[in-house]
Image (tube, rainbow over all chains, first blue to last red; front, side):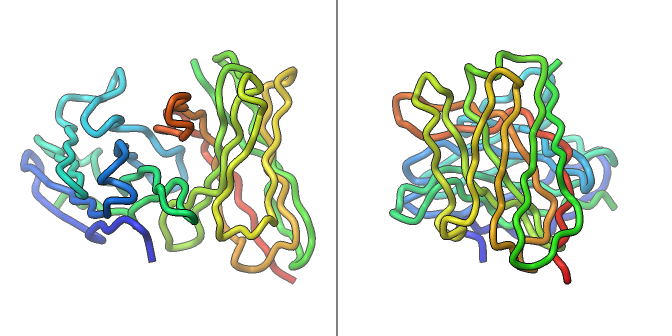
Length: 111
Length: 126
């Protein structure tokens, strides 16, 4: 059971938009920045979004992040077949047994 | 180009120990905190712990779930971070990743993980 909650999967056609939600609490998302990671199985995870809504150099503008209260969202516009991967949100949890916490991951399928 | 390469994985018997290495290049290793993660079969990413740079005493924080079985260390002269695993169980079977950390020195927490290795597989089985 992950501390942050993500839907297990989402799908859309090429060119469309998908939204991946990440729900937490005041001990994590509510008081810390969120980052998002793209992971193709068998490869290195890649940082997509940091500080809730910032893109590292080289990440297309099709990927955007936001945060409101205890939830965060990753939006992928202009979906491409190459976007088919697992996406994870992560943040720090301030509770005594906290630390870095992730969502369970959302599998994006391009149909 | 920043590169991280994990090594040291393999088959290990329950109760034994194993040390993983994360060999880095392309950045000034000593300036950065480093972190370890794992992904068990069919599951998501799990944070294991991180080690601060020696400018901040190279101190470590770990996931509470590890109950002190894992230790992270670093050798700045070689650009390598280590994960020492002890008393392993079948639940430790996973792909293990290391990452470079962007560390919030004011808040004292890792903010994000900007470069990762491809991982090394650890299989715990008798």
